[in-house]
Length: 541
Image (cartoon, rainbow, N blue to C red; front, top):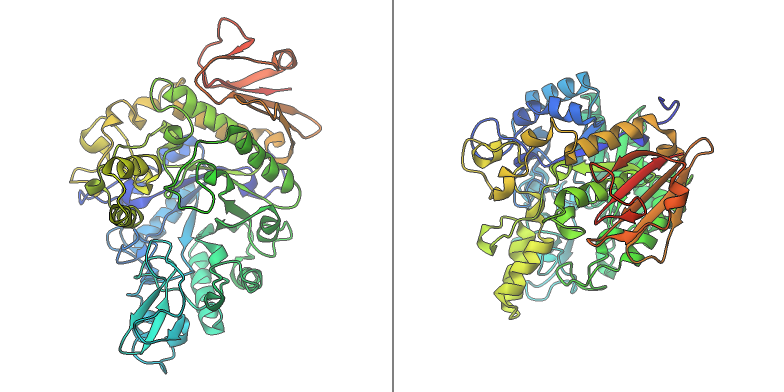
């Protein structure tokens, strides 16, 4: 049943493409826009409504494109503006929109604005960035970069420091400057006029900051800036906007995603992704997952935003390790546990995201430090070695949490380099591509791919997935994740065994009246009252 009068993005599933690792068309070992064009039929078969493209703008690639040197041109490693126009058009023919990844907190130090800004304090572009006077010895304060080291870089010819929250090659833009903001809004409208379907806003919570007082994000200026940007560029029919906000809580998310459309369409928050991190420490400092707390986090967001905002649903993206390796079993129960994670997430309210290869159950790779390319990993390795951490500890941290786990090339087939490239891939290919690849899965009804395809179809057909209330079940159970959705016409029940041991199903009697829509297993078990390892069931009443 088609849902009426609902924004398309509330019943769609968005697929994230990390372009350099998706499909290489010219054999240089780096994925590109023409490569994506060749895979549109695959994405149409999956059923997605939009492609979120990680940045393809001109960039020195210090942070794999999140350091933009020209917001209105395509980096030659990915193709041309004409290739982008063709991608927009061809995707549109298949009912797929293109969402661009906008990095508005900072630019590259090779952007013409920053090149001008460094020429003199009187240059018109100088105030496009954040500068403080100094002596070249003692930075303005002790703020640290997210990638390690000080957040201030000395420029001797100016006698000033510039502020950078991330790489030294990513100077922060000065959002307090109205001329800068107007320039960014013009750029956004230029892309929207070209047919772009939406924008994902990188670290949107960092746009409001006060570095003099140690405030790196969520300063009082933040939401006024976002509302101004929305009025200037986002309030077009059908345009979707997604705000990445690591700091967001439920109350903040209600501002970002207010149903009145004053800011953004939805928030992309990460509370559930901090579940295995020691509070107050870096992501590399890990603790075992508190499963009951994980359930409480999902419930808090599902109930807290109901009718008052809109959330993104995800297990993976380009900054996170593979979910089946992090939360489930990437060994003997890889297929079942990958399906379980999918069913659990896609039954909730919000817009689900699928990161490339997630729909195949791709896994982490056991990187050696010298095989890594990610700036965050390389900085961690340097710092932790200097602090005396063992090579075994460092390798385990990379294996479990490194961003390059998500960036190994897409596994298309059993051809050399997984069919990703005919050349030398920019990053190592996971050797398990011979067992895990799209060519093997796309024609099979029992594959992880088929499970995702079914979930995407169900979201379009069942209004309860979009509109239903959320009621957690078995909240203190330490092995089962279960919940009920209800829109007054239908009820949906999802029950998942999150672990690798069989367990009695306390909801069996309730389930008898429901129609099984989907399971993580391909055939019923001997005893329906037992949930097998990583068994998930989705039932409709």
